[in-house]
Image (cartoon, rainbow, N blue to C red):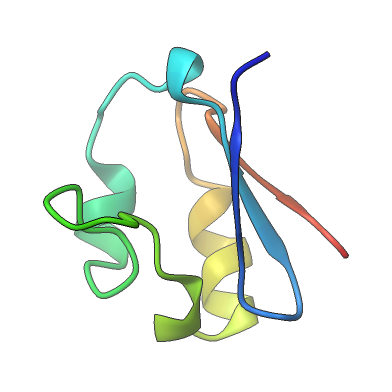
Length: 69
């Protein structure tokens, strides 16, 4: 399974590109964290852990998930 992980030191955002439907919910909700034009495109340090967990829960495809280190 192809996946990428991005950590803010408290939680890890796991992104599964093959599941992603590019709905844009992540970018619209936390544009300082998710910017598809940049690399890395996910910068979890730009939001609080609570904000990240709340946003990831709204991912309609399940491509984003949270795990704890």
